[in-house]
Length: 175
Ligand SMILES: *[C@@H]1O[C@H](CO)[C@@H](O)[C@H](O)[C@H]1NC(C)=O
Ligand SMILES: *[C@@H]1O[C@H](CO)[C@@H](O)[C@H](O)[C@H]1NC(C)=O
Image 1 (spheres, rainbow, N blue to C red):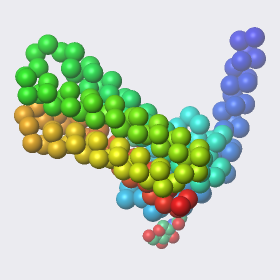
Image 2 (image 1 turned 135 degrees about the horizontal axis):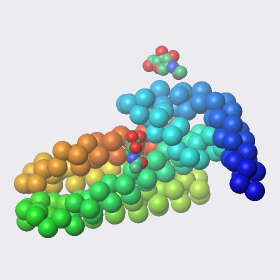
Image 3 (image 1 turned 30 degrees about the vertical axis):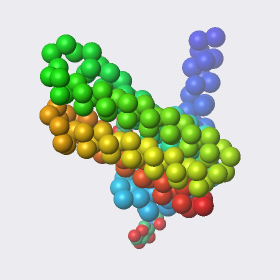
């Protein structure tokens, strides 16, 4: 049984990589319009659903939004962990709490944008993605303007914003 599972796993990987190769042209064509094509391609191709699923622009868009959503969840966990430390300055704590809320909002807005994608409501997708961008820009302003600057969180914000902008760009192609 174990061996069978291993073989099945291997076949699945092979199948995914074949299908993935077949579609990588489409991903790079789309990502060529991104402000950061390399990040765009790697963020989409590294998603587990990419090979099997990335056959159409619509599917690639859903993967692009999922990549942003996974990034938001990881950053929420990062902030949560930092907030659990006891030696935080009050100003740092306040900034992290704001950012935590901003990431929760952004994650919900990305969920809404996926629902809108599934309904082919591309104008709504645009609205939700922009709302997520604006939430994380608020976190960025809090980081810049208050004590408690956090270099890693700033970098995470930058990547998250790029991922959302890539998703916006792909959504435009569908509109
Ligand atoms: C990407 O864009 C450049 C111009 O910005 C163009 O020369 C190139 O052919 C494009 N590549 C693809 C794969 O579309
Ligand atoms: C967030 O996105 C970046 C760029 O694709 C990637 O390097 C990083 O691993 C992602 N983190 C998570 C947890 O998805």
